[in-house]
Structures are given as C-alpha cells and as structure tokens.
Image: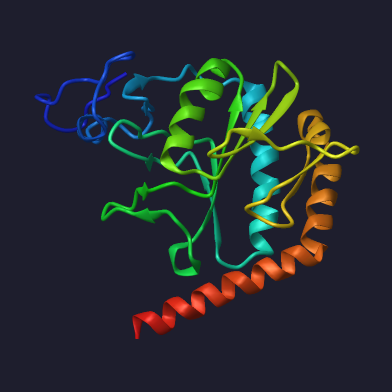
Length: 233
C-alpha cells in the first residue's frame, strides 16, 4: 500500500515510535486517507484490520449516541475523528459525544477542522486492542480532561464506564442500565448493547430522553448558547 501522497522527504510513521504530537501530525498529514495511526502517550500505534464484531458493536453504540444527540440540540456525535488532546496525544476515538463550543462545550477545532481539546465523552470498542483501550488511552483521556469514558469490551462481555478525573466506574442499576452524569438522560442498557439487541437499546435511550433531567439539561444548553451570543455582541 502506498502511504505517501506528498513529498517523500517526510519520514513514514512506524509502529511503536516515540513522537511529539506536532511531529506525529506532520507525518500523518502526508499519508493516504485509508491509513490510520494514533499517538497514545507519545507512542505511535497502528491498529490491525477491523474485525466484524468490532464493526457491529461500533454501529450499535453509534446508533444509541446518535438518537440521544438528535433529541439534544447543541451536541455532536463523531466517528473516528482525529482529536488533538495534548503534546503527546492524538488519538482517533471510535466515538465521541461532545457539547459544541457555542453551547458551552470544552473542545474546539483547529483551522484544519480537527477536534482540539477534550470532548465530554469518548468511547472505544475494545476487541483486539483491549490493553491499549483500558490503559494507554484511558490515561490519555483522563489527563486531557475528558469527563466520561466508555469502553465496550467484546470478548470480556463487559461495559466499563469511567468518570474522570477520579477514574471511578459508573455502576449499572439492577436492570443493567448505565446513566451518564455529564449527559443527563443518556441511558445505556449494557447487556442489551453487548447482545446487540437494538430494540432494547433504543427503548432505553428513549426512556432516558423522556426523563425530566434531560429536559433540564436541554434548557441549560440553550442558556449557555444565549450567554455566548450575548457575550459575542
């Protein structure tokens, strides 16, 4: 595979290489669109080809986040977006749920339209790279200021939902439902998600959206946008 589309004087990225985010980004910028690499804790990681179980669970969780976003003005769901988190971290999280800057969100964009700064929630489908997702990425996300991190471990059949900076794990209720604290009304049925029971996953998302805490959150987002507009006048 030809990885270089620009001047060959730029060195190729190598798996396991130690780089700064600036140098990593410089080299990554000359790669073809189908090439993927991440900088985690200052180390270059090149993921293996995507397996079917990873792709299937990714789509399931993506659908749940999209449904929540559709009912919550001021949010954005991102899929594998390059995210600059610091001087030694430039991952491509499987999924991100962020509050847009004009609604009071913490992350922004570069001039090249890459995400810069910590989205409020990041999610990874942990399959062949479980060790990376539960260790290196977890540390990077916590250090960058991400508030919640979801790791769906396929082979282990377990969902981890961490709240930073304490790394405390959010616990499911007696029905297996996890409730986000940063996104009120974002309810995820862990067992249903792992079983890819789409009907149940969507039903629980709708229940969360119908909860009064979600309506209150939407009002807070609207108020934050109003303050931003007033400040910019």
